Every structure is written in structure tokens, then in C-alpha cells.
Length: 530
Image (cartoon, helix red, strand yellow):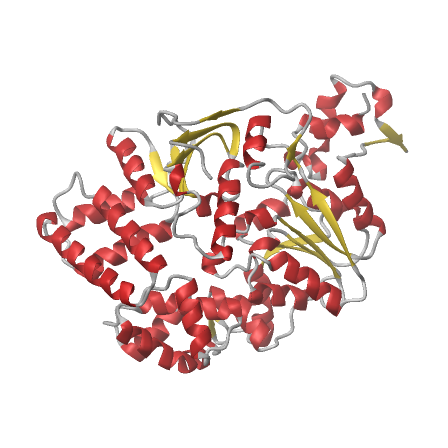
């Protein structure tokens, strides 16, 4: 069997650990144990290898190497998109190349695999470098917006978290800060919960002032790093070829920053519309289609479309389950059968991934394992923070007994729900109810508010617990995988409150994401989803 055919099969089609040039010797050593020397290319005393992928990958690589068009690659879950990008980047000769990643850890990991002439960076680092060119002494302050809010409304303004979220979404969407209808649409769409109608009106009235203060480039937060270069039209470092991954999750501000970095250059866009699940935080589920349209309209290069449809992660039964929602997902010919269990007894072990549509069941089951001495944690420090915020809206007294606190909490939640009902804000009611249920689940073994807050910190404390059972909402789980995946309360998928076409599509995508995390066994703790 030729070496170039065997390589993808040795590593489930990803070769993710062997893409650095200094690691080829390891792969070669493995292959020499089973393959004839005649299959290895020899040139001028050097051993070389030719990597041959699937038909889909070869078509993509050929266009990267020999073509000049923009490329849009739709890649399903576990289809080897990272390997495809890395190998493709090696085949593009000449020019300045850059890869844009969503976070620092992804950029760092890819930086080890990409060729030396391709720079891996985050959106934030690209934007910050643009700002630093304009203002060298610009300082980073993650609390910039909170400080602005505090200066305007005072430290007692209870709706600071809600206003901070609204400002972030206005930046990411490049919306009009003076359009009342646009602002209220964002508040409703993204479930922003102000502490009453009065607070909400005060916030809206002050938004133009807040925007002017946000445009101060001497101090920037993370949103500013992407937003300011776009709205102030600052020069952005240019690349001849720009690779972008997870394109289905981009917001308008990110798209415009990318286009500025690739002005006149070549764009290679990779993503999966089936995994577009971040609409709640400003991502546009039509991002890839919008990208494509902009490239067609603003460039003479043309755009070519490609697909990666063969998953190397999921066994046959998991793929069949995913195809209940999308029919264009396939597995490799030699994939194992795998297993899908319905109404399974919940008995997770270390390394398992437990998913749910909402937080309260995760918190309850995770807390139960912890009290049994079983290592477990819930992903999402922001969720833990939101629970602490809700507690502190009721009291700042950590010594208050839960006997007094829980009735006060219930009263606070009831009043907020009644107010939200008058405004027909069903999503906010759902979110608040979920938080309340989480707090009740964590109140069982303590007597004071301080003990409750300690439980919140414990259950969402992810450090040092990587060997335990991982609990996560489906939104937090994208990018994760595990041999054994559990889905709690599958009857909530799709969520019954998803009524609009956009909401229903997001729910369908969530089902797909949850199912495709499983590498061996998928367990429904109840009836199957959908």
C-alpha cells in the first residue's frame, strides 16, 4: 500500500499531531515498520513524503496551490478541517499568509502546525496591532465599559451587566446606537435583562454618550480591539492570503475587520452552517453566505465552493443519528458501529461529557457527583458569575441564612417575572427561571449565603479538574469531543420556546452539535432529541 494513501488512515484523517516539519521523522518511523521503502519518495539524498487526502481534500488543496479564487469550504463536525487548512497553507507558495482564530489557545496550537510563513493570530491581536499603530500608548482595560457606566450612573446602578452586554452587541453588530427600534430589537433578541423599565430607558437615552466615550482609543477593551479599527477606519495589517475558521460564528464587526486585512488579497473561508449556534451573543447564522456575497461583490477573483463531508470522529450510529437533522453527513468506510442508547441510566465516569440545553439539570447532577466525592465541574465561568450577580441583587450579606435568603430570592424572581410578562419577554423569563433553579440546586448542603456562593465557585471552578466528568451546555460544548456523551433532559431539544424560524434553526443546529460530540457512545437520559 503506498505511503501517501496510508497516512490519512493512520491518524483518522487529521494528522493533527504530525504537521510540524520536525515531526515527520516520527511518522516516517511508524510507516517504515509496515510499508515498503519503495513507497517513500527519494530526492537528492533526502526522504520526502507526499500526503494524499480524500477526494474532497485533494480538490481543495489543488485550488489552494494552483488557483487564485476566494474559497468557501463547508466542513462538517470532525471532518478534518484543521488538517485540511494546515496542509493547504503549506502548498500556497509566496505572499504573506495569516490565519485568524477565535481565541488565543487555538491560535497558539495552530501556530505549531502551520508553515513558518503563515502567521496564526486572533481577531483581537489583529485589531490591537492596528490600534497600536495609531496610538502606541493605548492601554487594555477589560472593565472599560463598566467604568464608563459607573461614571455616568454611579456605583449603585444595578443594570450595569445588562448595559455592558447591550454595548457589546451594538459594537459586534455595527448597529445604530441612536436608533430606538434597533436597540430594542437587540434587547429582545438577545435576552438582555435590565432591572426594570426605568433602568432600561436610562440606558438607551445615554447610549450616544457612551459610544463617544467608547471611541476613546487611549483605553480599549476586547470588543474595542475589533470594533474601533472598523468604525474609525484604522489601517490594518494586510495579508495576501487570509485563512478564517468557524466562519459561521462571525458577527458583522469581525467580518469587516477580516475584509480590511485581506483588501485585494485572497480569502479562504472555512465553517459549518450546521454548527451556527451563537446567535444569542451576536453571531449571524448566515455569516458564511454573507461572506460569500461580499467577496463576490467586492472582488474580481471569483469565489469557489467546496465541501468536507466525511467525519473521522463519529461512528456509523452517531452519523445516522445526526442525519435525522441533516442528510449530508457521512463517515469513513471503516468507521466502527458505535452505540446510541435511549432512556439510559445516568452513570457517567471521568472523561465523559454531559450536555443539556439549559443549566439547572447540569448544576444539579454535577453537584450530586461532587457531594459523592466524584470529580466533576460545569463549563462556563460566566454562568457562575451570573448566578453570583443574581444572589447579590437580593443581598450583599454573606452571613444571611438561607432560611431568610431563599424566600427573598423567590420574591425578587417573581417580581421580575411579572414585569417581564408585561413586556412579553419570554426568553428573559426562561433565563431567569433557569438561574433560580440553579441556585436552588446548590443550596441543599449549606446554611448561609456565603456557603451558597462557595458552592457556585466550586462547581464552576474548572482548574485542576480536567480528569473529572465534564458538564456543559451545548453552546459551551462546540469544539469538544468525548468517547461517551450524555444528554440530559433531551425533551428540551428543540426547546419548546423556540417559535421563530431563526430560533428553530438554531435549535436544530444545537441537536446536531450535541450528537456529533460523541466518538463512541451517545446516551439519552430520556427519549431521543427531536
